[in-house]
Length: 571
Image (cartoon, rainbow, N blue to C red; front, side):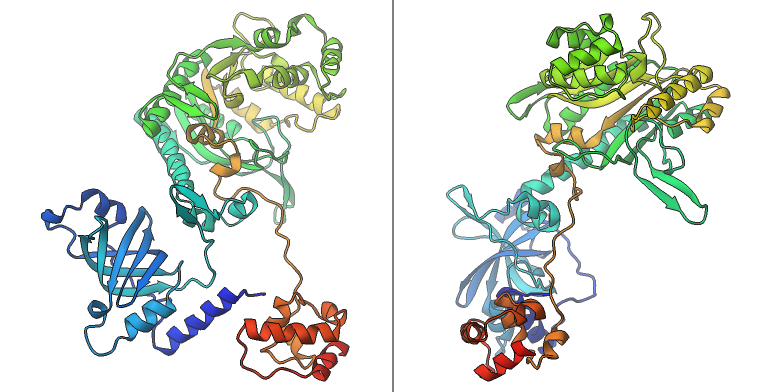
């Protein structure tokens, strides 16, 4: 492991604390009794409150001023200023705690606990006068330095690659990021409360499934050794939830992780969170009305209003929402009447538009592709797209009055699909035929076609009541409600490529060349990380560079001679 100068210095400070008998990682409870936001909201000098406060958090700044100093503490709820006075911390002759521990051995990023009382400084800033402090965790890596001046932020930790890979650092130095995830939690709790009030049961269904079903998507596949059988990470939980409706529950819901082995972009992650719920004796018209209420309630809960900014648009989440059939929407935005075209004619029209299509795509898939190409981006305000072709919806009840269509809707907001709902297919004979149609598509090369699920068909044979169900993408909903354009911003740990780690030979390998351990970090700082790199180095250059590195790293050991350096390189 290559350590920076700061990292080496912090490790040295850790050792100094241990030598002084101070454990930089104590085990005992620290009895926090208040948070920064409560103090800042409620403190009044005349009230007499907050005269015995205990806080804990991360040091985010220092202003050392001789015998008194200020620091900034960041806890779970915000930041507050701390005031340290040497004689308060060290009332006796021994001033080590202030002069050495506080001034020399603490760093930005360290977690400390403080006890004291709240007061207002001469500048009018509410602060904690510290009577006692305790080191709770010594930070061995420095935080990115984020500077603010005149309302401007400098040197921000803003590189997405770093932010998503090191989300823990992102949360520390970018407070607005934490707010996104607090809002995400409120979205889920708001919906959960709505469902619980209606008497619906929150359930859990299998993530590892023998048959991947409930959606058209490419699954992740694994193998169970004991059972000696393939298993799939679920692409949807629909078929299991509907089994529970068969079993006698009138309403069930699940917030769960889904997995689809497909592309990644600003709105897709291989692992994502979906809400699905199913209610007996309802249809898709009822579900549209409830969906409007859900989105309106969530917006109000988060923002205190139903119209919110999303990118350059103002989105109104109060219903009712416009309702367009999918064929009507395609005709409106592309001029193509899909109802009047055969599969081959529709494929030709897609090619004419410059779309990539193949012979494995049936008419339903072609309609879906055409809709995505020509319509989606125009649906800014919440809009229900209804009445899909039967080929596109193998789990949906046939339309009660329109031949060849099903009772399905998708909700689109800001050009993206947010929800997908049906009047659920409960005819087991029809369902089996639909699965067989999917198998035919799979044989034509459609790797997103659904598999046959014989047990689900068997459950329907015991009779499932008329039911409506819906799936809502929690990640995309959070993007909307927090005005984020990338799904990675609303996932704590989005999927990323494996981190590239530089090859570094062990210190023992360098030591076998006769190199003293004191010079190994110096060679690494010079970019010589392996014996192979050392073998290719120029002895004169290494010798000269070591002299400069000795001064930079403040190495007390005597310089090796040029002959010694040559011997290192020549092995």
